[in-house]
Image (spheres, rainbow, N blue to C red):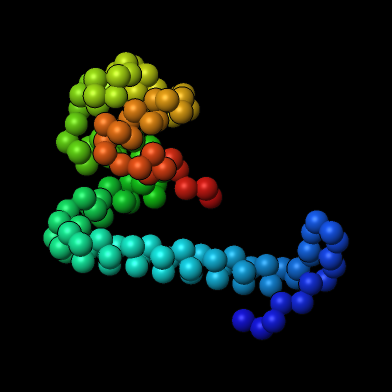
Length: 131
């Protein structure tokens, strides 16, 4: 990447050319990808390759995530749980869980925390990536 030259600068803002902005975003995404890879490699060293990868989602489930199916449903199925079993474990009603999975209700922070704990995943795994 060439040196980025601001177009304009104020006390609070900097204006960049679009190409420079896009290069910065791409570089940040690359750094995030590298950090994810290093984290996965470190986890494999600690747990062993098979144990570290045992919880990875299958290609089919990843495809469904990419098709925008609700992550809670994906993780519930990955864990082999029925909607009633997950609802019971998280302390929410099955109908509320169905509304969240069906994208009819967004779900409360408290519900997402309880669902994440029941699914044994970080809560951010249960949200869609921004498009």
